[in-house]
Length: 37
Image (cartoon, rainbow, N blue to C red):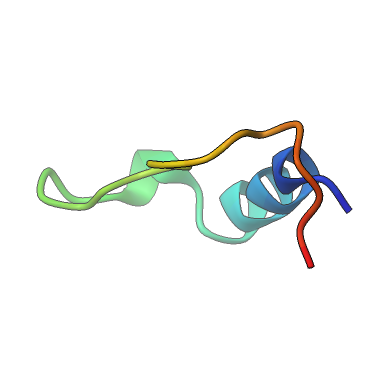
């Protein structure tokens, strides 16, 4: 599974639009084309 797929799944579970202003949303460090293990 790519990190991109994992981020999409997490975004569907907890949409970024529901975040508060102090929440860090999305992948902060890394490469979306890498495999998650």
